[in-house]
View 1 (cartoon, rainbow, N blue to C red):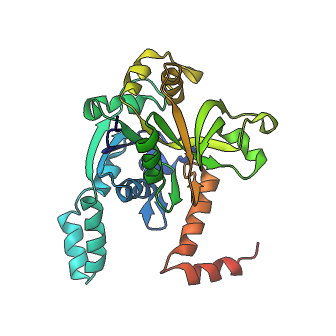
View 2: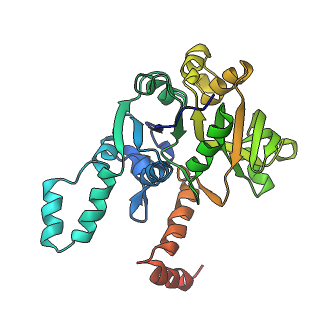
View 3: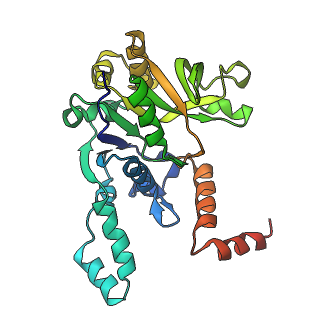
Length: 294
């Protein structure tokens, strides 16, 4: 039976962003700039470049800036750019609104990363769909989601993006998978060990960040009890379906780099790296960094 086509991407963006307070008191953490684009735009662009243009963003309080960003520019901004002979900038921001179909849902229910997924059931209905977090991204060619969709179309089930962790001591920061090799960079997941001791980790592959899920995930999320911290965890619902016989795969993303922009230190590293790649900034910025007395 041929797998159904992935037509929708869900981006949870309802978190409080407490690690970035006071900056995120009134501004969504997903709108933190990576030079001149917010984090969440990189996530949306990944979905669009993977062939999916229906974007469901799950929001919460103080997240209106996300909707405004992906909306058409207001008249005052248009007039300002036109009068300043900045039509090239106007064209760029108009593209943002045109690149996808945006749907917004307010998150309700208990805390946990499974809650925003459950919130989209009325919109997703009986379709498989993808989930990409709004405060982190994997930069790769081809895009991470496209690589995941190719695996899903061949094997079905559940697909989670995998990232190779280079430093052994970093294994304790992630959910690390015990794997059974399928082919190439595709593995079936036997279990996921959350934040293991590096000496006891079952592999060096972290599975997180991107998911392709069947509609059965909604039933699973309703069936499971709150887990660690009294929260509804997506991984618990995935394990629920795994026990029912739905296979879970990971694809280790080729030519990919993970950017955890929900972490202050990693966020700053990301900004510096992207500034060094920016065509308008790279030369002067590189000179500036070299001139710092560190």
